[in-house]
Length: 130
Length: 367
Image (cartoon, chains in turn green, orange):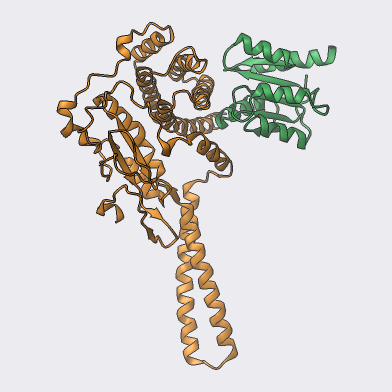
């Protein structure tokens, strides 16, 4: 599984949601967390320093999660960064679009720490066996 | 980690309140500019966000209500439904219920609301089973209106030539750039910091102490000046004291300014109130708000806001909009406008500036 010291970026336009996600991550032992309010801010943070994992909301102003994901995948420095997308309910079209764009996994909210752990484990295994 | 949970819930309450307050205004704007896709997306996102966070926190009634509202909004957003006054009525009713649910969350009273009525109305809209009849505005009560409509000071006469079947069809010049200003606000919001009011009050108290000390020092200085007018130290002391006095005054003003908020916070309630009133009376009312950027102390804002806008009769004057408006352009339509004016604030010393905006000032307003 991922190192609990890895640096995670939580992206959401609603600050309460960022806190909730931060809290769930904390339950799993991750505490090296930074936040961004939208895709644009997240992208510039990712460019500024090294992150190991991104948990991003979908629907955000300025730059939404999908657009940000595309930008990450087309950036030579960031293209291998694991991205987990958070969606409100399983919306097929969106999930397909995200998979095409190279998302590592998606999670439907509300989720528990246990579900998040499973999703992160799946990402980890795919990265290390693939 | 119950403390962290409690903190998250408190944040949720504050943030949700902000979202819901902003929604009223956005919906009223949307009714005027029904094809505004950006605005629709913004509204959809707000409700969607609210649903997501409510799900995490176990506020199931909020989830149910936001979910059904979101479904209607999605159809509007995707162009599968058109914004009609009836749909607006129902969505606004849902938003009002969300506000009520938030009160229950805030007060932890464990109360639930009966959502079945609103949910079935929303579902009927979503499934397209709303009959044409219900999309008509409610019956006009023009005959009995003149007295009662004054509750909002909107005059009801001379509207007969304007059939109420397409309220909000005209665009209002003053409110047209609402999206752009929304973007500006967003940039502004990122530069703000939420500070506990107690901390600000504490700074204000300390500055008060400082002012007292400054006053004493000034008195001592003038005594020394009288006794030792020739001593070189005296002039240095006078100079330093004067400088300190200046800085203290500036500091006092700066601290007081941190507590100032635009009166817009209170005025924001009026568009929705006027919209509901106009709709229930089958009237067209154009609300023009001036000077909402005027800043007053937080406590004053709270005092005004604490009174229900329905009881609060805005100090305003209606006028026939056939005359020139404040932008200098004549309003072409034959209807009444409701005009609310905040005093223009010009400097720290509250100098008044009157603008010849044609809106008509009530003598009481300038007090």
